[in-house]
Length: 379
Image (cartoon, rainbow, N blue to C red; front, side):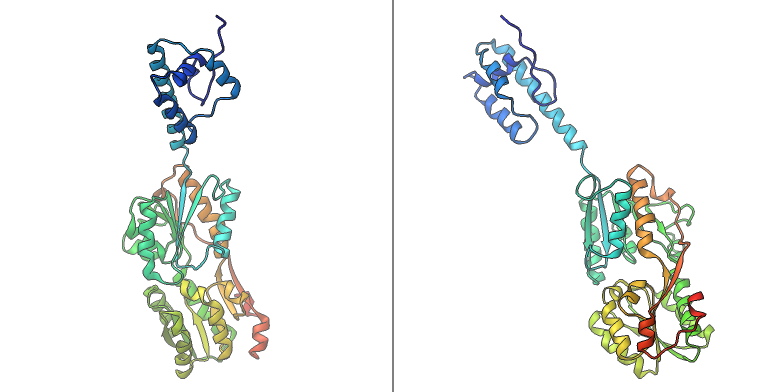
């Protein structure tokens, strides 16, 4: 009898085709056919070629012992292939944010940073978005969803970092870190955070005070300023800007706006209180409503300073702060890469921005009848 070369069906052990052929054809073992067909449908075994089936059919007699050995080998090979597929699952990255949509500048920058490091969503990573659309009450439930999936790392946007750590003390979290996290013991220090949080320090407190100074330097005649503040945000930021106003000799009225529908009333309250300029404090809900806020500022002819340049892109007058999309592209994407490669978040130091930008919309200044002093951009 001519000996045929073993046929490799699924990347598992080489099996003599006569064994598999008898297993398929033997009337006493009809389950063998169903077993192999199931493995083929599940993608664990490749369907034999016509030539291989022809070779198998020549061997329609075999001892029962050899049939059992062949089936056992087939099962071992199938399980081995299934195990290989299980270990090949792609990492999941969770994004927890008060934003409305995934197609924003910061998320575009984040995905671009990941691509530069070799990660492509849907191919070798999966990005799970949980976006609260400006409603912070939805964030805890969304954080729990990410933990249950589970994701391999959570990238938190703004105040979502607090919610994320309430949901998990084990899954790594990357986000904007402030000194209050050190004060309450959530992180040990910026150099050695410990625990499961790392990221960057956005100078939220210092910049809120600095923006008020920029506004005063640009328009020395102003004496009353309104600060737009979401009570769901940081009270430390509010306290800082109120202290800065006292230092600058400004009368500051803090206008609390908790929902988008309260924005028109907030501006009316600011004007009724005699405010002639506006400082918008950092908040995801405000950022989502930036077109509306800029429009209301123009309607009430109030020079305003904002925390992000996207406000100026929509017609706002001033913005001063770090390049946030750049942080998402470089710091956050880089730290995701490091964590997926095995680094612990507690060993990754909190990064600090090195570049700040003052952006002025001269067209808006002209429309408001304002002259921006040449010294303002130097700030």
